[in-house]
Image (cartoon, rainbow, N blue to C red):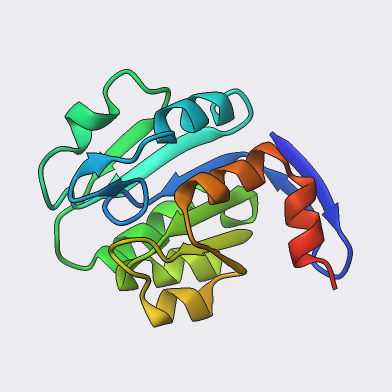
Length: 156
């Protein structure tokens, strides 16, 4: 668990990390460099979940051996599916990371929503729905390894 008190934002007791796959942890289905190590380190503090339609069909192989739960969803209604998934875990104990339009609702609902703008871009709706924006998944995951960075960014 990651416990934080953020002035003007509130207390956080984070237990879950929910990530999109394509555009977030991977580009063109290939896991980005540095992600495996960061996810493994975070798994000591958070239950890590990846939820994806797996557009390229590579997520199971690319994530094999990592301490996480992979959920592959149907391509329809992904926005609602991801939102329901975050709610099932407990949105108030979840940090979510994504870049696509289908991530917007889970990013808004999670205790902390982090939108990404990487090579696949970042949907404007997801950026608007998030608490903060990063330009690399490595930076987003590092925020969770160094939680005082979250305090510095989110306090008011």
